[in-house]
Image (tube, rainbow, N blue to C red; front, side, top):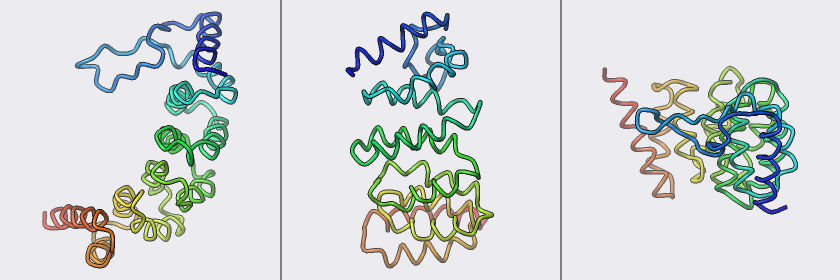
Length: 208
């Protein structure tokens, strides 16, 4: 199915459902001080978008709908849909995968931790995992999170996000020696720079 048919089908169904603000569908505004707030009624559209989501094949339209699904927390079914599409697409389209991963991280709960950890530790997903890695500190009471993050700080695709999550998981004081070791021993120059910046931030916090 083409982009035109995917998007046209969605717009037709949204119109029939009486959803307002269709002219802003796909326009995301981060700061309403500089840009008008989107008028698209994503809350009203959510059930319809959730139903249509599995049948979307065009990456750009899939990305748009995934972002809307990620904004809402009305039920648990969206995680399953986002997880399935992440597994299907992330290895082949990292940009799409990143957006899917971001929405997946927002919709994930403690009940989904097994699946999130599985994704985090699968390096074949590359940088698409970044926001999932960044999010798992929320479940830090589970020992597996700390173990995973200590490993992921050495993965160049997600190292920066893992370092931030590790600090939140075990605290700055405990993270400092671990990140000093990464800074001094990693064969990857990018990881060493990231570790040094994290060390600098920790030292600043601890000195306050």
